[in-house]
Picture: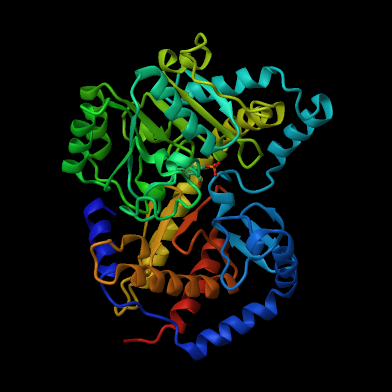
Length: 469
Ligand SMILES: Cc1ncc(COP(=O)(O)O)c(C=O)c1O
């Protein structure tokens, strides 16, 4: 689906009334959810005593309470009550081969048995893994392994400031670049500024500027205005649009940003935490044919194994990581670049290529998009639709992300729309679907016809709960 159509359909949903599940039916669904997930409920109740809010996973579906998982294999998950799920959360994106993939796990077990988990000193796998990344991403000449995507974004900004000697960093409203102090600004919903920044000193945002997605005029203004204010060190973007394409990107957006960065002597940072090796084996930088100066990598490079992030890029820029005292961008991480993580990176990238995982996941995603859109089109009273960028799918039902702060009653609209989407998600979960935030799905190479049939049936059930209008 093309950009203009996606944007116009998202806005149409965001400005039309929602289609809630009526109270009586909703109560029945809720009751069944409680009955089917009694062990999860018990664990959630225990968790609330020892974990704030009882849940630590932002991507977890927590309505009416989060489910505790027992195990995962291929595209399937099983919860502690023995319920089976078709998993489209896939740990938030990194799983491309399928969960608990024997060939990868065997290599990691060998590393643990032969070498132990970590020494805090160099190991050969660091170099092997870095070479695998460099081979595939055109904008990458050197790599520094870290422990999360959040750290990667923090590091990229620090490196850009150290290299350029400038302070300002521009980001796009609605984008997510982890939870470091400077980046929790205007997240999820464009234009919300410091709304979600409790506990962060306002000074942190003195040199952070946000522009609205695809606002070409505002973008140029941000570069111009900050030229006289010490200059722009970098612009950081999610190359397929904020929240992995939840805020879709105009076809000319990245190219324009590259041009402005060059004109104003700023660096371009691609946050490829999800897109590298999921959108394209050469990253979004190959997909869009645009070379960033710095690239942030995250969870996908270790395929779900822990301690997973990296900042990477041009050799001259990255050299500030080991420059002399006073010029050096200080980075650290005791467990970063450990043998387990770097072996996971090396083997996962090779296995993804061996099995053509990305193409298989993308082919399935195309089928799923078509299947769901065909189903939704049987209900012409509902504006629901799905769009995908390869194995990254977005399904729009209430479009709370597309509400604008200039829309009437915007805050209540966002809350209402989120609640209705959560109710749909609860019903879909009951039918054995695991998705992300009630709006997103990732696919892996093992999703098959059975998964597709189950998904369509689950959505048939959700639609059956919504009265025809
Ligand atoms: C685009 C993007 N950047 C950064 C991050 C943060 O990565 P992590 O959760 O590993 O800190 C995420 C996490 O989902 C992400 O999607």
